[in-house]
Length: 80
Picture 1: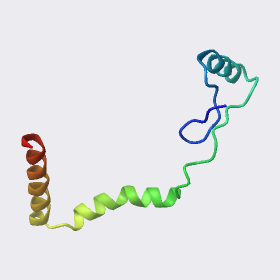
Picture 2 (picture 1 turned 30 degrees about the vertical axis):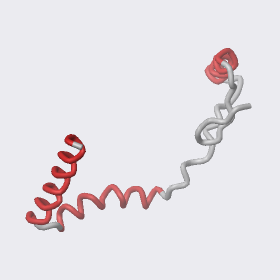
Picture 3 (picture 1 turned 60 degrees about the vertical axis):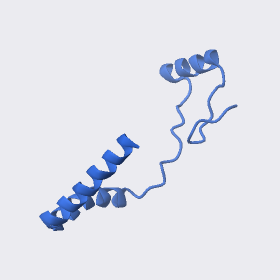
């Protein structure tokens, strides 16, 4: 049986996939959601806070410098 991108087993043909969906919908089989992505939930939450904290700690000059560099990079991609 073929495996999906996260290693889950799924039917290789369309009819087999349709039958599997119907069985999941009727409760005949349980959908195997598999293991989580392996990332620590607390670390993910801290990562979301990190960008805001970085921006708050940065001087306006530094933000302008980063923005200038990003704009220059975008323009180089378009022309090159």
